[in-house]
Every structure is written in structure tokens, then in C-alpha cells.
Length: 201
Image (cartoon, rainbow, N blue to C red; front, side, top):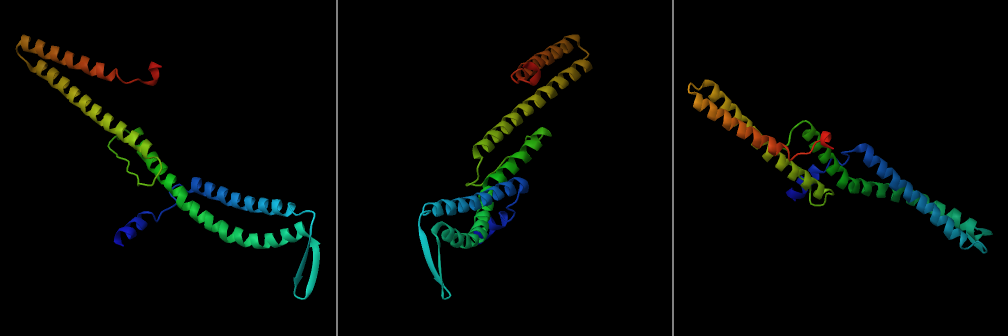
């Protein structure tokens, strides 16, 4: 019971992307209204050549079947549109949350990546959409973290080599440290060459 309550508390904010979710919920509600009216029209047209007799409150009425059906069905369907439509819209809120939530998390992760932060890990629930995309972004962040760490270590090693060369009293040792710094710089440049940037295209 406590686990279910914890999950419910996590899902209390169903409108994580209000504009997008509201648009989809409104479209679903309009689809329900249009479908109901279309069904009423088609059903009434199927009996266009018949007459219907109704008896209500001691009054006997004779009218064309399509008109009679349309009146009765619209009365009933308005109840369905108001109750069923809102119920379907309420369900749509849960459905849209399954992809609106992941989109919100993916956008947040991308904003952090644009700012230079590759440490975030995107975690989605089991039933959420976009798990493959989240996994790809997580693998990208992991690779970037490894590469950036290697670049930092290479840069630090180059700096230490140059500092040692500058402080060395022996010209041979200074030359050796400069050669080591040059080798590390070439390795770093080669590794950076694996990345393709916009200017390369």
C-alpha cells in the first residue's frame, strides 16, 4: 500500500507540459463530439424512408424516423458528450502524461548538455515512452564523460611536462619533457579529430 501511495505522489503532477497535453486532450474531446454527431447522422439516415410513432404523456406523435431518432439520440448523446467526453479527457490526461513526462525529462537533460553538463542520467518509468532515446542520450553522456576526463588528464600531463621543462636546469631533461609534451599534444589532437563539427561539413 505504501509503495502504491509513493508512486501516486510521484505522479500527482500530471501536467508537466501543459500546452502540449492540453492540446491533445482538447483534440480527443473534439473527436468524441464529432464521432457522436456523425454516428447520429448516419444512423438517422439509414432509416430515412420510415415513420416512427411515439407515445409520451398521453400524447401520440408521428414523425419521420430520422428526425425522431436525431432528437432522441442527441438528447442522450449530450449526456454522453458531457460525462463520457470529460471522462475520456481525464483518461487522456494519464495517457499524455506517459510521453509528456519523458519529453520534459529529455528537454531538461538536453538543456544541461547545452550548458556543458554531461553528468545527468535520464531515468524513466517502466511504462513511459522514449526509453530508447533516453538510453541513447545516457550512453552519449557516458562516452562524453569518459572522453572529457581523458582530455583533462592529457591537458594536465602536457602542462606538467612544460612546467618541468621550464624549471629544468639540464637542457637534456628540458628537451625530453618538451618532446613528451609534444607527443601528448599529438595524441590529444588525434583523439579530438574523431569528433566531427559543423565547420567540417
